Amino acid sequence: MSAEMFDIHQHYGALIGVPGSGGRVTTPQEDCANRIEFLDSFGIDQAALMPGHSYAAPRGFADIRAINDGLHVYADLAPERFPAVFGTLDPRHGSVNYAEVERLAAMGFRGLSWHHRMQGLPMDHPVMFAIAERMAAGGMVFMAHCYAQGDFEAPWRLRRLAERFPAMPFVALDAMTSPENLDQLLAIADKLDNVTIDLTSSLCGPRGVAHAVERVGAERLVFGSNFYSMSRVARISALDVTLEAGLSESERAAILGGNARRVLGLS
Amino acid sequence: MIIDINTRVLRPADEYELIESPSIAARIEPGLASVPTDMRCMLTPPVYYSLENGIADNRAINDALLTSAAKRPGWRMFGLAEPKYGDAATAEIERLGSLGAAGVVWSPRAQGIFGNDHSLAQLCIHADKCGLVSMIRSAPYSVNEGLWRLWALAKQCPGVPLVLIGAFESWENIQFVREHQGGGENLFYDLSLLSESWDLDALVGSLGSDRLLFGSGGLDLVERTLDIVERSDLAAPARDAILSGNAAGLLA
Image 1 (cartoon, helix red, strand yellow):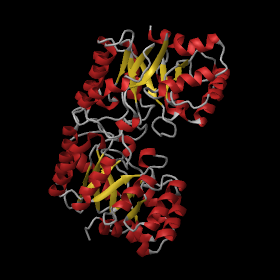
Image 2 (image 1 turned 90 degrees about the vertical axis):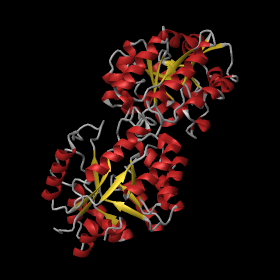
Image 3 (image 1 turned 180 degrees about the horizontal axis):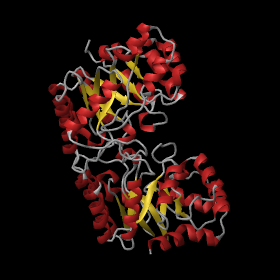
Image 4 (image 1 turned 180 degrees about the vertical axis):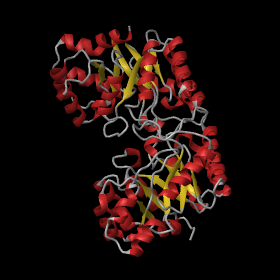
């Protein structure tokens, strides 16, 4: 397996409310040590970090700022392993988010991430366009979960944003969570060069990867594990299906690391 | 007197712009001017609103609804609390109970939580202990508010009545509810967003009239929903139960 593997899909935080998801909250130091152990066990060189998106925020915007600040501190525990950090903003906090985009860009956040079905507004709400406009100005990457049948995070909503901001990279996370979902996102990626397909949590098998490569090319796919804080992972479905898809060595290397580094501007 | 159990105080199109919570108070009264005065209305909160200030935003909306309801004899309100706010949500529920609210409306889709989440079940049970009826929005096609999730929620709350609101917006949901005679016996349904009177006739034919409540969705929808009931073929006892009797029993 390549020593250059890059995992674009890891969460710092636990997943609340999904039975069997595991994970727990502990000190940043213990969390980091556990995460690096996970990376090493699968031969993953580096990873991008984003928050969990099912947070509680009873203090409103102040809580989200604290989440972003905590993530920034956490990544500094091992910057050589976590070279790209993504914050989040709660769309329901409205216009107060706009200045936060600029603050996070200045802090070195590579972009922002969302899981809209957990964050209470559709991906294409006017607030999101206003946020995206500022992200584009700051050279950031837009990471959006597009889980199958996700309603607020449906592929067509991503398309509206990606069309409006053609110079900004969009990563469609959880794209392979159903064959129908994958085909919708491939149809979008086929038309929009700024959309990249994430293989995390694949439910489409190796054939799904082969199909995606055939449709849009290997250079448009990225690998992710969906690792949450302190979770125990026996296997990574996205890794298995990529290795079993009958790809060439260069295609595999691109999907497992090279593409993510290029999209994130790390190469 | 007719009881509208779901008089939503803002038009959805207005909510969508994420109105700041303090300004919601100023918008309620002008909207309510269009609601008939010869019925008892249970005011329900918007689905979308700013949460910039967290639980304080919830309180501001609840206080505005309490104020508007108090101005009208017999009217009451359903409040809100973000399920993910944990202890802060629990405290807000208790405050609503102490202030005479009728219940709480939960919006899993807009509150970013799955409708069958264990923590939501605990909050519904707690609300019941505080004398509050829980109503849960059931937007068709929402992964968070799918009927199967809300039915699973009801199973976690045995003996606690749950009113699903907006479920009849889609024909598919209507068929599902009919096929299963309404699901668990602690499940009730309002009529908001129902389109046709013959669907109401069919629903009564499948699950009876005891668990259907007149809830309009508010403002412009009050007359429309009343018209659906009027155009139905329901016998007088069923009509009376839906328009007032069932709600009176639930809110007693």
